[in-house]
Length: 310
Image (cartoon, rainbow, N blue to C red):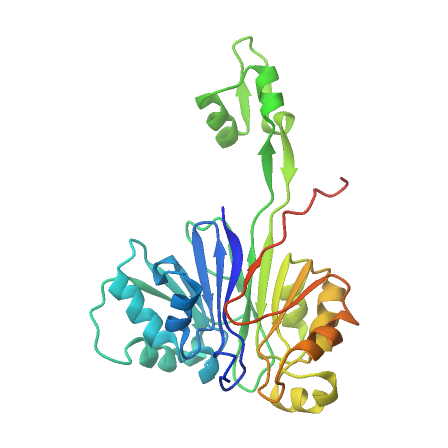
């Protein structure tokens, strides 16, 4: 199954010649979570070779334009393509009027169910039928803002050799997975743990437009993939504080303290013509894998970590 981040845009506030407004699509097996679709996101999806029908959930951190002005085009494109599934939309409840305006920005024929899921505070969100949980945490920005975290539960990986040794095959395998135990023809019982290995769940977090705060640490804790704003360099830390943003150094220190496996920096100010300095600054504080996101890049989620103790 496919688990990767498709970067649709990396600019903060205004697009540049080389950076589109924000936009990030996290492909997670059969789900597609679109984060903060800024202006031009629909066209960026085309450039990235990804269908709007892949989107199953939309997550908006806040209602500054560079994080939401692409919503009308994305919503209307989804309705034009008519995927066979509803689309859930998560966004700060305090911005309901903005969501409603963007949803109905112009005339179109609504063919797909858009399920509004306004976020009122830190906690778990509704994700009926999803193979993961989605949680939100309040951030620190001049307007109400939330970050998001996807967490897959731990599971078990079946061992074909151990199944064969017990003579378990066909429909019996599915029954064992569903029930957790299976009674064999000889009357003995085999548990799922006896024929499988632990499979740690994976996780990803998305942190935009915020100063350092409790919510940043909560979202980042132990994730495999952290996508986080690094609007400014440390030399401009006063601007970051004044406008409610992070520096590359702050993002990297967050990743180091949280035990993140892969760090993705993004949301770069137009004052920086390239991101080499962001990458260098981050690497001074975080020795894990670090990426400075670029428009249309495809960034894989790290391979599943080995079980604890292995």
